[in-house]
Image 1 (cartoon, rainbow, N blue to C red):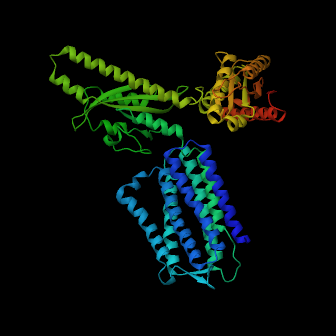
Image 2: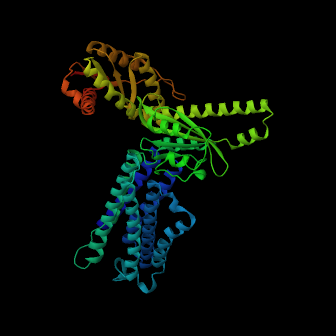
Image 3: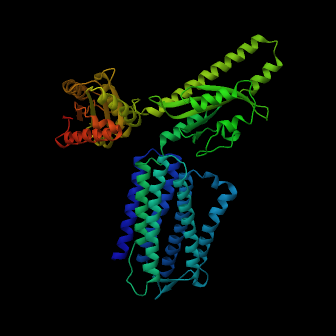
Length: 553
């Protein structure tokens, strides 16, 4: 095997390793299945290139050469499909539009397969290891470049739109991947096709580009949660509810709309919702001006109204805020079709008993919706696995708390802790046992805390504890108590003969300095505190774990 062959086969095995890693490290959903199929198509290019260089028969070489360029068509289409799903433009996949997406790739594949009179590719010196490309190659290349341009255009639109920062982060990551792969493909064409006669062959450039783009994909899936399972499960939950549910951010942008509401309202994720415009299309026995005034100027207050629209339907509209520390971060608008109830009232006014039963049913339904709204509000500030607060809630809470503590000279402390050698638990017993261990550890920590202390999941197996009105000595005693409680906590797992226990490393930061300058920018000051306690935790790990490193500011 010569060096040229070695490069492509090495890159194939690296791509295969990433394929196995994704398959083994995530919970497989339908979106992951689509990605794994796409990933598999990217693995075919280097293996086909390897086969071309190792086969002696020109017919066999031509077969693998055609297979590699057909695979390039699949990669181009896969990139575009992934971009469509990621940027939320699934409307492009309607029947007529989807045909337009695939026709150019089919034409390219036909040119490759037929290769009429060698107008796509011809062998040099009786072998396809060295080859020359004809006009159909450049025609096919133009079409594939078109796919890349469309993908880049859709990503650009997503980045300048009002989509959430999380979506934009994912788009940026994938954009880097497609740019890197495109650059390497063009380098391959320029150096090994255009300048073939004047430069020695440089192997594996396209394969390297594919490998680097896969790395960006893996980062998007794991770090940026491109296929967030919690979001998928959340969507499945609200899609089972018969009433329409609309979730808005604090700028009135639609971030969630359930299946029941989509056919009834001309909105989609990313649209701007206009309550006044919606109400102007109907009539109400209530006071629309009062409802709108409350909705616009008192957004933290729940409000509701019933509307009758030109299609004859009576819709009960209820709004509920999603807030953190009395700060609005969004709201839930529910739409309940009560047209049937009105019809029954008009037809059976004399049946008061039946009418009361219907009213009671309506009250029960409204209570159910209110409970659903409360659950949605709770989901926004808590961690799904452990039930404790999430990082977003705690950082927003701390900004307010830190400012008050500094203003009134009240000492406080922050603990950042990490489960020691948690990766070994996942490797030895599986991620399910790892999740059980995290949950058991959280319950043990709760037993050691006071009612005023706040526990939150900081990320992965890291947790942060805020201790208000706590001196250095009190914080040290409480940290030791937490450490001891966790260390003595024994967890019994089915099919494992012995109980499991873990230790934790802790960084403890106590604040006794109440400099007035810190009040000017509490957000910056809070970031400095978190960096300090993170360094203390790092020292605890570096010094051997299962210990507490304390610092005082």
